[in-house]
Length: 344
Image 1: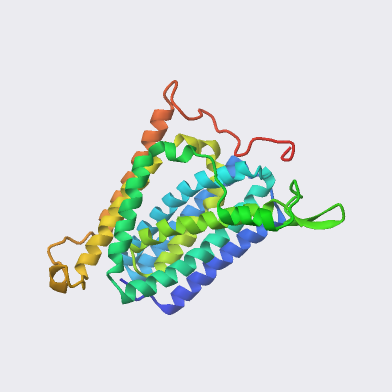
Image 2: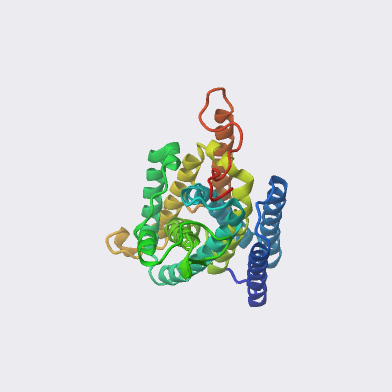
């Protein structure tokens, strides 16, 4: 449902979060560097605090309902974003991106993700408002995704990154230098202006973001149908992703049970979407085209509890298992990208 939040509040909130994004981008552009663990931890805590503060502000302005839906959506998007970091790490390693330029690459990826997800959110909200039966499709897709993730299990993150067709096409069409030139997208080689591999990395990150949006947007629409809450939850989840990347580093390899936690969350939300579709059923071959009243409604606090318990359980179980002698996964964080002649 769409909550009746004051228009002034929504406009002010959107201006504030976009301003934060622009400021963050400006800082990365002016001062590319490899953040320390302490710096990354401080910024992750700042963004988590901002998200919790925004939820509190929502509770004051609109009540407990929008605040709870925002928290559930933010937690879900944040957990899915952590899963995205596995692929980002593989892309960085595959293209041997210099560590001092990884912040910039991640920031560009986050901006692309917000633009792509913004389009998906507007389209999804318009479709769901007109055709509520789409909830059945979203729900079935999430349940299918959950089963696939659970089946692949912890081994799903061990695969090497494979270039998609668009990335390969960019490589063939654009004149490309052999190595990087700082943070430049274009450089001069033998008097000829060519692109650096950084442009291919941007394309790889952008297309990956697009694929991840197919999971994350249906998932959050299963928790709230308010476009404002959907978008702000995505913004706050993505804003701390860059710092989280450097904070976790090789520790991501230790989260071996995270896919199972995500599978539980996506499966739960998928079933919740199907239940929502049954509550507003208009399909003639189901219950004579009438809503199915006997299906229980899932309150927001139950969604929050399932999401929180699934994430906490998967994280704790992963860390306990990987601490055992001889367990798979590094005991100490590994560099995000192994040094090569180009990255030294």
